[in-house]
Amino acid sequence: MSAEDENKVVVDVLVAGAGPSGLLLANELVRRGADGRIKVRVVDAALGPSEHSKALAVQLNSLEIFHDLGVAARALSEGKSLASNTVFAGKGCKQELKIKLDSLPGESPFPGILVLPQSRTEKILLDNLKSLGGNVEYGTELMGFSNTKDGLVECRLRAEGREFTVLARYLVGTDGAHSAVRHGLGMKFTGHKLEGEFLLADCDINEEGGGKIFDGTGAIGKIEGGMGGFFPYARDGGASWRAIITRREEDSGAQASLAEVQRALDFLPTKATARSPRWISVFALHSRQVESYGSGTTFLAGDAAHIHSPAGGQGMNLGLADSQNLAWKLAMAVQGCASPGLLDTYSEERHPVGRRILTSTDAAFAGMTSPGALSRAARGILFSSFGRKRILPILSARAPKMVSQLWVNYRASSLSQEVLPWKPWRSWPLHAGDRLPFLTLASTGKSTTTLDLKRGTSFVLVLFCSSEGAADLLLSGLDAAREALEPIAAGPGLEVSMIVDFMLKADATAGDLCSHASSPLASALSLFRVEDSADFKQKFGLKDGIALVRPDGYVGYLEALGMKSQLSSYVRRLTK
Image (cartoon, rainbow, N blue to C red):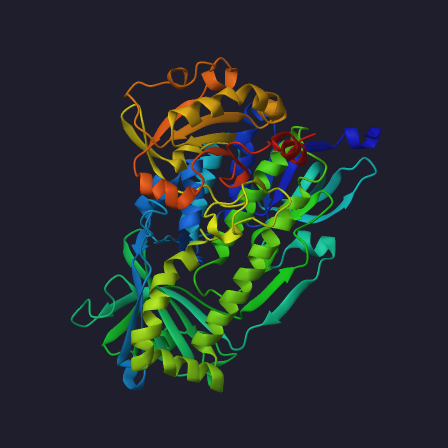
């Protein structure tokens, strides 16, 4: 570092933008760098936290991220579960279709969609960040940045009329659709503007007779000019409704008003009145994505990397998962134990997920709002007798999983490796790159789940077996695994757990299962018994083997018992 640079503040990671993506990233980094081992600085040009509701939907995958962070219970207590949406169409909107959006039993313990204003989501994450010793510097704008000859990022900031410089090892732009970081990188935001102009309003809705349509579930109606959607959420002082409305061509360019919300309500088969607007805004929608989520030591996440229609409530959740993926890799890089290519896998893994969600939300939104002949025909089929009997049940069955983002996997990633016996590939339910399946487990007489097994900031080596003989073999091999896993244990940390699919005595330990359980890994092992054997077999496929679970809960390495281990070569992909 040059003498001039020595006089400037140096941090490990500068996070530009304190929305949900930036706040989650900061939380994940700070909790991995206790006692200041990872120096994180978070700045935001806004003068304080947002008071607007903005994004409302917190999907299942995000709730699992919040559970890992320790804030899911608070989010659930402050939000409202959305069990279904009812779609109204036809003359007088008298045709209706109810699409269920409730939980996915057996796949996650949380409700399907939690409706929680973004302002509250940010408050929860900000409070947790402060409890960990972090903070946000509001009123601090990133003016520009450049790379130094020493490999640092020189960030030029402005606060209270004063400009100053911070040197960062890494810069992450979570600064939204108009990202200064993205502009500074010169990255194209490829995509298109969606057709039409849209109105967003937060207000009260009073229904005559009460509860006919506005009963706490979502309502979407075919209105003049397109579609009108109404979604309930909890707020201080009572319930409120979010309206998202396609504006008529004759209203385009005019100032938004509550009258437009009322006009949309008048199309629904009930008598309802919009009152007490708290926020009304007009906006255009875009579908865009950068070509890469990173360049050198600078990265993008959330709306800075991708924006799309609100269909399915995906946007904020997509950004939260970006931050979860990036955080553990950044932490390893800061701690000096990451392989040279580890950070490149962030864009490798997350860009395809973003592309798929952009494509699906574009199609869904066009299907709901487009005035084109093809979209009109598709809507007509959906509301027909055939559509109700044949298509709607399929949509209702698939919708919860589609919006949950639990379908996301990284099977194609260079960080996913498996050693399995030959079998038609699709016949294995679990592959490297998949989220660790949700199972209910028992330990020392108490019920728990795989969500708690992988909770925390460490990697988890999971041994799973269906017999005492297999358990003995797996535990005997821990000494060999210990050397391969030492770089992980010395860096981000390693926990070891065993899941058994056979009966155990209540106080059984690893030593009871293996006469060779002298390995330090075995002595620290946590033992769990499967509560539902059929569920275990359906989700894992393999009876006996090992899985190395990444800090974000995805299986990085999967090996069947009896196969030649490639664990050492896999660990070298992750670490120096």
